[in-house]
Length: 318
Image (cartoon, one colour):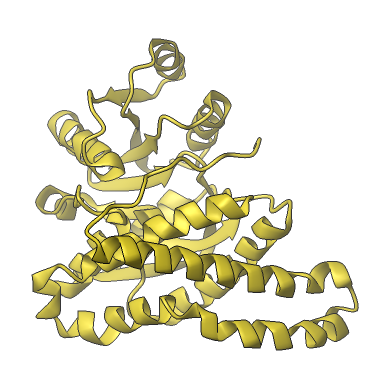
């Protein structure tokens, strides 16, 4: 049996019903040939929630502080996992993650496809897009999946996927980073390790559904990307200079894509013959503007030596 630890981080902002639905989904996955242990890690003490989770057969890891935010919580949980379980693989999920039933089985096969592969994951999909912003994020997922399949550098958001545990025994998440998943991926690729895109499976995630939440989320991501430029060892890496730095620069000049989005509006109306679908072009313009503002705000605060505020993202009922 392959021993797998599933680690799901729960922020203080998560509604209880979202956590409970997460448990139901995780327990419904296909575990053929797998011995799983499911860990929910929290930064806060909630006796009622802990009791409910434990009655449902999952393990709850609670730490006494928010040091290092999500990265700190995961590192704390990893220490507990390696003390009590010694898994072959670690699978990371967010509380809104809805992996396909054979996600673990197929990703384990993927991560074992090469000695230097450290992570395997799948395409991303938006879970139940219900308004303009969530429909735009769904379109973003399509574009993201296109480049994930073709790029040598695959950064799976949230580091959601299956990793060989031996890498996590040596490497931990940077608790000073606002984009710990990106920092970890870049660090591993800079050291010569690889990531694998697994075809045929998927993971659904709840998209943001307000422009305010998109701004808050992306400002944090951009700030984390700027933090990477302070990593001295990365400047010595040809991989960083060739692959990552251009992506950071491109992401901060999205304003140049706005004319393309505007001029695509009429062709989309003709193509779809449906204004409801072609309105995504309008949403895409707004999306670019919000991302650009988030990038400029993050850059300003980074240059001033001030961190961005870590705010929660509101969830829709799932």
